[in-house]
Image 1 (cartoon, rainbow, N blue to C red):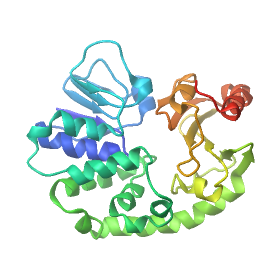
Image 2 (image 1 turned 180 degrees about the vertical axis):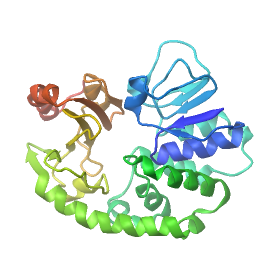
Image 3 (image 1 turned 60 degrees about the horizontal axis):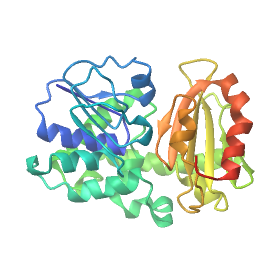
Image 4 (image 1 turned 45 degrees about the horizontal axis):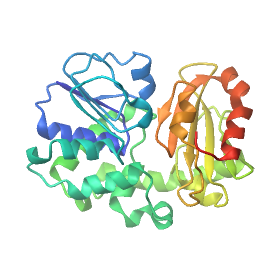
Length: 296
């Protein structure tokens, strides 16, 4: 059996929990949703997919994204929830020998962006938030780190985990990156009627940083639209749209909006990849929807 999940905090915790209840015989497959949607992930019988869209070749599926719902029976569970990890924890509640209550509660808060301004600006005060910021899904070279964090969560307490040498080094790197990322956000973000638009397409190297930082820099905005090049596919971009976690006025369902372009997500955040020409032809329409700020 094999776990198939995405490399973010929710996916990391999904893998942690699933390893406790299944006899896993193969390394975890870390993939982004677009590869599942495009049938490029090589899903096979015996796979347990979590925190990703459904693939009919898998044996189990657990997810919570509104846009991933399906209309037929499967083995596992889908429901709208704060995290996929929380669904797995409830589903196998009596099968765990280790207490993961705190880990799952914090994962719920992190994945649903129910964080305080202090936790965003001073993440070191919350070790779970700090750990989550070290998990970046844009570099396959990080797989050994993702696997290490899963192993640590299964055996160690959070206070010891953030003191582990590689974790500690990555935390320091996150702090350094955020200082640089702030400069990029200020340079490449424009404001349009309460909407912050971050366009990183002029950059050959995509900056890495705290995904919530844009909301603290532009507190009067209620939603952010970020565009960046899809490095492995020329002429394509990745579009991400997310509600501000400080100015909670946005009523547009981000997942539904990006689903129009083959993407998906939650009420508060969604992403998709598409041809740059398609995005440019639709940009004004997207901005109009966000500006009207009504439910869709």
